Length: 236
Image (tube, helix red, strand yellow):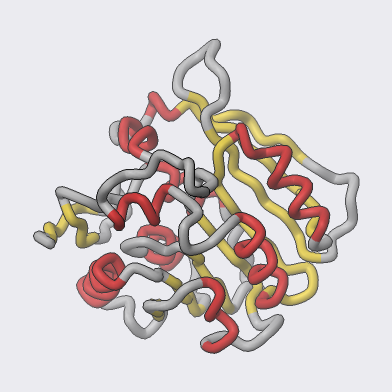
């Protein structure tokens, strides 16, 4: 792996990336910006953290303690280097562990917020996956699934804690059903587009653990063509 040090968009931060394999994409930026940061938030965990763009962006908006979980060792090392490069190691802790292991590191019902930019595609024996294992794991549900993420979010979140997720629109019905199954109420959604008069390509979702149903808000859509790095969004 050959790592390079790049700017993290325009946040005044640096991020280590592998030019040939793994780069953060605009969906991670949109997810971090979607999070409602309140003074009462003291603990945040980011699942599928990659090279830690979401924790680092959130660190510019809150003094809360932030935890990141990344199962792939090489990507975890990029995240650790990025956190140290920006002198954020007192605020951000990165773990080389799967989501299934989260309760070995965090106490149940201890988190105010969970964020996740997960693998977007289901996986089975017939799935066409990238020959590069790191890319395959980042894109397909090989090591974790949508339901795994929601279940573990329920375990670590406090009552009324918030789950923020970015995902593909073609899985929205499944996402909504799974959230209801584990007693999450969807409170806010925001659709992401690539130009006018085109179908939405992704959706941002905010859900509350044990929340009351009936107050869903749909925020104005986001046109990614307004972002200089919008092409990264299609690399997933």
